[in-house]
Structures are given as C-alpha cells and as structure tokens.
Image 1: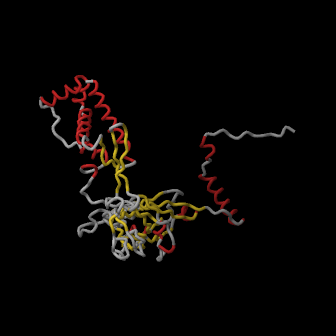
Image 2: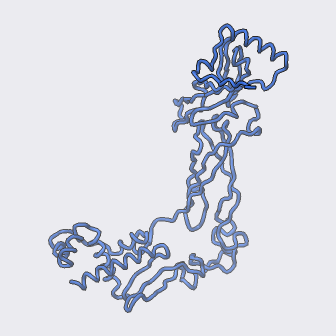
Image 3: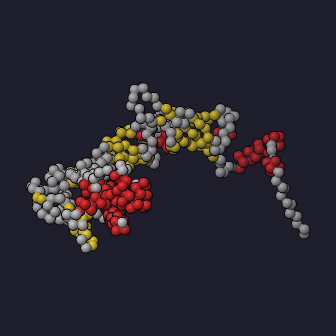
Length: 390
C-alpha cells in the first residue's frame, strides 16, 4: 500500500515537472523505456483523475488504491479514457502530444489612424498605407530562386529534433526541439530567392481604404478580416484599425468653419464664445457659428439681456450624430447630441483718462442711488483705523 501511494505521488510530481517545463519546450513523450511507456502514461492519467475528483480523492486518502478499485468495480466512475488526453491538456494539443488538425492563424495587427473631427461628424472615405508582410510573388512563397526545395537532412522534414535525456536509472525524458538547421521549416534551400532571400515573405507598402461612418466614436475599431501579415505557414490574422482624433489644423479646415475647433465629449460638442464688456452687460449682439457641415448656428441676446462670464448655454440637437449599427438602412434617422456654449467676458485692460472719468462719474451716480456696499453686506469686520500718535 505504501509503495503504491509513493508511486502515485511520484507520478504526480512528474506531471508537475512537465507543466513547469511547458514554457521551454513542447513535450513529445515521457518514457521509462520505450516498451513500458504506454503503461506508465496510463498510470499517470489514472493518478491525475483520482486526485482532481473530490470524491475519489477522499476515498484514496482513507482506503488507498484498494478503495479506488472497489469504487470503480461498484460503478463509481473510472471509465475508459485516453491517457494521452491528459498531456494534451498540459501542452496545448488537440490530440496525441499536441498535434492539431486546425490550420495555424497569424497574429492580428493593430493600426491607429488619426482623422479630423469634421470627418467624424460628416463621415468620410480615406486611405492609409502600412508596411504589410506579403508572400513573395517572385518565388511564390517557396524561398527558392529555381523552385527547388529539399527536405532537411537533419530533421527529416519534420522541423523538429527529438532529444533524449536520462532523468534517473531506467527513466528517460524525450524533448521535441526546433531544428536549428532549417529553422523549424523542415526544408532546405540551396539557391535562395533574390527578392526575399529565402524568407518566403517580403514587406512592402500596402494601401487600405478606410470608411468612417458618420458619428463614429473615438477609439472605435474597424476590423479587416485576414488582412494582417501573410505567411505560407499560417492564415493571415485580422487588421484592426483604431480611429483617433487629430488636433485641429488649418489644412483640415479649408472652408474655415468654426466647428473645426469644437471640443468633443461623447455625443456632445463644446465651444467657447468671447463677449466684450458692452455685449455682456448691455446685450444687443449676435453671432453666426459655422458648424462642421457648414450650416449656421445663431447665438445672440436682445438689448438689456445680461450674460455672466462663465455662463453655459445649451443648444439642443447641435452636437455629434449618434451613430447606430443600422446607419445604412433606409429607415434610419440620425439623432444628435447637444452643443454647449461657454461665454467668456473680456474686460478692457486699459482706458484713456477721459473714458475713465466718464465711467467713474456714471458708477458713482448710480451707486449713490441704488448701489449696494458688498463689504457691509458681507458682515465682515471693519478695517482698523491706524492713527499717528505723534
């Protein structure tokens, strides 16, 4: 019983070692000699299945291996299973020792494109270039100048070599390692392609047409399926384009619209309008703001209407179009966010003497009639009077 328990724990230790080694190599097989390898694989699998199940783990702790056998005989699980599936879990495979029937897929490529706020508002179609990896057209992805590709004599065309190491007396470990001679391709080339130099791929500028939907969000992503880097060894991944907003620039504003300098937050737009002291105090002013599609937004106040500095006015429906997935449908109608206008009052920093005297006389006249002493109203103590004792 004790020997059996020790064997079970030893096998689990080997599983742990195999798991830790995953980052360094893909295990091809474990063996205690070629003839006994299948039996040992089955024992490792049985040990694993026993200890990951809380019920069988408790039976093993109390009654050992005999208790497990009785549990199986009484119909308590432990049906037949493929012991190699256990190692597939560790090493990421889809069958015996990591073999996979699925075709390899390349990595996705992310690319950021900056566009103007005007294009976000109106929608646009533009182009950009990036340096994409293509299968070499000269050699058609073989890497050979004359089309002749030979099987690697070192790995026999497998792209990997099997290295065997002894762990203990009668116990060996076999590791599958990448073949250095052919760089894992399993093929050797005598006369390399003059364009790709035997690499089978080349990088060259590639133009991509980009369609921006009206009202698209900043940092939204447009996915081009299978348009990432190509290779004879995999199916191309996706090209993922993220939309960023450009800083305002004159070259992006040929019509000199005010809207090019709007600030965007979600579906709303923000604008700062400057008023003179007379306009803020007396009213009687108008402003025509040209929007991002050149339509006019009219602001203004009648005479006698006062605007405080920092006041924010809401103009409904003059913000960004609210983008929806069904934007191309005939029945779709755009909704819009709001435009928020902040007023900033500019005070004169200097006046000539005549203007100063006229304003002072006016203020004093009306202060004497209707003026309010803000200091007295505040309830603060009066300043102390300093007297000269001399």
